[in-house]
Amino acid sequence: MFPGGRKRARESARACLRREIKEELPKLKVGRIRLWKEVTSKNRRSGRKMSDAIFVARKASGRLTIGDKNEIDKAVWRKPRGIRLTPTSRYIRDRLFPTL
Figure 1 (spheres, rainbow, N blue to C red):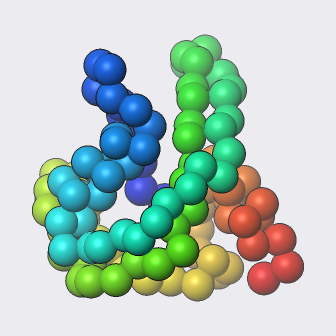
Figure 2 (cartoon, one colour; figure 1 turned 135 degrees about the horizontal axis):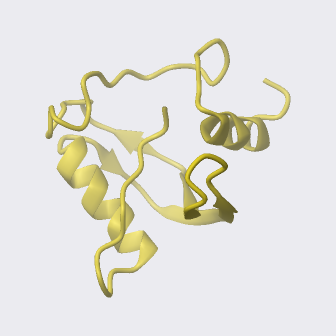
């Protein structure tokens, strides 16, 4: 699954991304990021509104050391195909990597 998190009060989406990466994968260094797409939807089961800001980084380096083992049990680099994904993650993968 792609990483994610929730914004705090008065926190920008970009600041939320940086904070979540620092909390969950503290040794990962992410270069310049840009907003790729904002997606709003409704959860079919709960009816709850969902809002996602999807960012793309040109460069990432460092170790995938887990910071919060209650949120993440494993972190590995994978190619975008051949892994089980949630419908949201599959949508993101297919839009970012349409021909892979």
